Image (cartoon, rainbow, N blue to C red):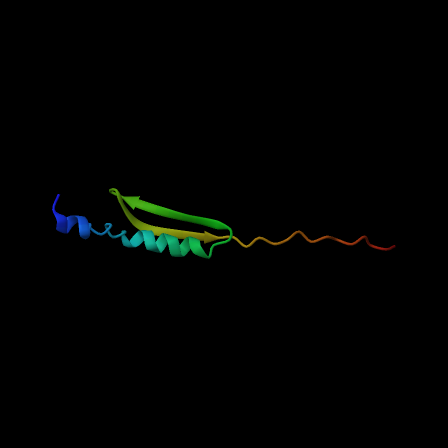
Amino acid sequence: MNPETALHPDPAPAEPEWVALVRSKVRDLRYGVVQLVVHDGRVTQIERTERTRLEPVREEPRSR
């Protein structure tokens, strides 16, 4: 083992750009889907569908 290598190990390989994009799409998503489209083994498109969930409304009894 080369002493120079032991002191300075190779940095981790850089993440592909699409990984950072997926993280940003998921980070602030409360309800929804993040979908990857792959062509020939490569991510070519990222789709995000967001849902807005509404709390059920409690109806008050009507008076006659």
